Structure formats: structure tokens, C-alpha cells
Amino acid sequence: MLLFHPQFGGRLKKHHKEAYSRSKHWNGKEFDNLVETTMDVGLKTMPGLLKAQFTDRKVREPEKPIPIVPFDEKAWNEEPETPKFIWYGHSVGLLKIGGKNILIDPMLGPDTSPIAPMTTKRFSENALVVIDALPKIDAVLYTHDHYDHIDLKSVKKRMPKVNKWFVGMGIGRHLERWKIASSQITEFDWWQDIDFDGVKITYTPSRHFTGRGPFDRQQTLWGGWNFNTEKLNIYWSGDGGYGEHFKEIGKRLGPFDHAFMENGQYNELWRQIHLHPEESIQAALDVNAKVATPVHWAGFALALHPWKEPIERFTTEAKNKNLAVSTPQIGELQILGTENSSNWWSELT
Image 1 (spheres, rainbow, N blue to C red):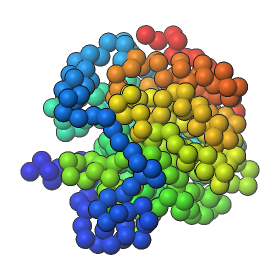
Image 2 (image 1 turned 90 degrees about the horizontal axis):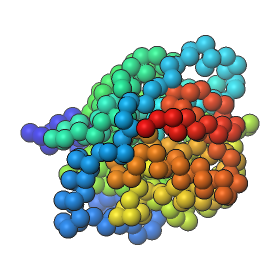
Image 3 (image 1 turned 90 degrees about the vertical axis):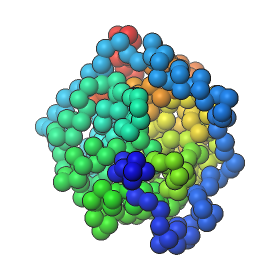
Image 4 (image 1 turned 30 degrees about the vertical axis):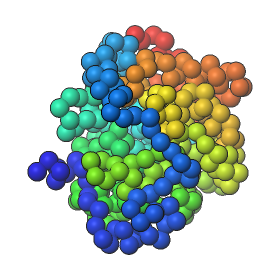
């Protein structure tokens, strides 16, 4: 019965495969990366990893919950044509671009292991209540379907306040199972774009994998997003390891006024599917970003590194490479394309 738990999302059926067959990245059974990609995790390494993941939490998590700056509706709505963003920890981003409210990977639930015997708890408390304060959302976008990016609790809380859902190929079947109308959902292949009332949105390649259950690995697509208007160009990397695709993204779609780069939950065993901090900076340079903001950190302990390590290495490397950064507090409103060298985390333990 567990295999039918709604957390797993929608099951792959024949008509899904027929739809995916129009993508050159679908091999008939699953989606492929642009280059060979592996994880060095097997029977020998798994027991030790699991033990460390669920028992050794010291320095991997903050001693106290990280506070979330309350949403300021008045400040958000002032000068509606001014591009803004708020980062809500891990990979959650609220953007105002071209007058549109766009919410990326809104996983605001308390746990990334909702059906596992042990939990992986969020660094901030009561993040789900953030959803109640947010404005009506013109579009929710998901980079991929992993539990730290899509959770059922957040989806159900968001549904009445969302107009459109833009997702990678295959993710739509999860949303449909969770009672979101298919007419609201648009699926994207890599490099596919749409004109969203003056905001050109493009789904970009990344080097990663997907799956929510034991039998659906790589049966939905993974990627990042580009948002382009006449005045602004934004890149959101999504999860994934380093590769030549970053240069190709920069060549095709750059330069970017602001790039949000994955930075955290890395390990040498899975280097090909997650960026290390120095690679995050290099990838930002590859896409030709003027300002970079690190995401995929300060949310959960999904790897074995100390929780502050990703941001400390990221900012050090950015300084070495003369790349401007914006590192706001969780929930702090910022103007897109502007620098903010706050080091708020240094005051926490």
C-alpha cells in the first residue's frame, strides 16, 4: 500500500511515455543527461552514509532555528515594475519580474523525508505559514521533482493562490494526482520557452536526476529556468553537477543580470550531480552572470558538510574571482541585479 502513497505523485502510464517520446532526451524508458553521469553510492558506502545522515547532526545543523524575515506586503507591492526577489531558504525563491509574481521550488514543508522512518528537518520553524502571507502567484515553477523541491503540504496550501504551474516534462502527472487541473499545467523540455505576458521563460538543461519513489528514477525531467524581459535577464540553475552546459546556456541566453546558483548538499561521492561551491562560482562565470546568489543551502542537512561551509566557500571564491554576490537573510526582500554582501550567518552557530 505504501507504493500508492500520494507523496510519490502520479504513476507513469503509456500515454505519458508517448508524450515524452517527442523529446530527444527520452530514451524510451527514462530521461538522459547530456553527458554520462553517475553517483558513487553503492552497497559499500550506503550504510555509513545513512548512519551519518541520521545520527551525526552536530555542526551540520544550526543550534537554533534560523529566523525568517516576515513578508512585507507593502514593500513587495511598491513600484511593481521594480524587479525583486525573496529567498526562503534552500531553493525557494519568490521573484517579481515584469510585474509577475513567480514562485520557484516552493518546498516550505518541515521535512524532506515525509514517508521515511527518520526525518530530515528544516532549519527554520513554521516555514509553511509563509505561504499564507504571500500574494497571489502568477506562476509556480519547479526545477525537478525531488522531495526537497516539491512537497505535498506546500502544494495543497498554494493551490487556491496559483494561476499557472510550469514544470519539467513528467512533473505534471504528480500535480494532477494532487488535484491540480491539467489546464493550469505546462510541461517543458530543455530549451523550450513560452511568452508569459511579456516574460520569456525558458527551461534550461542541468546535470542531475529525478524520482520520488523506488521505481520512477529519471522518469521526469530536471533543469533550471531563465526569465527574460526587455530590461532584465535572470538565471536559476536548478540542481546539478558541473558541465559544459553552463557555457552553452551563457552563449544562448546570457549574459545575466542575476544568477541563482545551486550551492550546498554536495559530497565527493555525488560530485557529478551537485555543484561544489567553487564550481558554483565557475558556473556563474560560465553563464556570464553579473551578480550571483547561492541557493540550496540553509534549509536542510542533506549532505555531511557543516551547514555554514557552502556559503563560506562560495563567498571566498566569489571574492577571489571578482564576482559580485547577493546573500540576503531568509525572507529578506532584495532588488534583482544588485549586490548585497551581508554575512548574517556569521552571527549564528
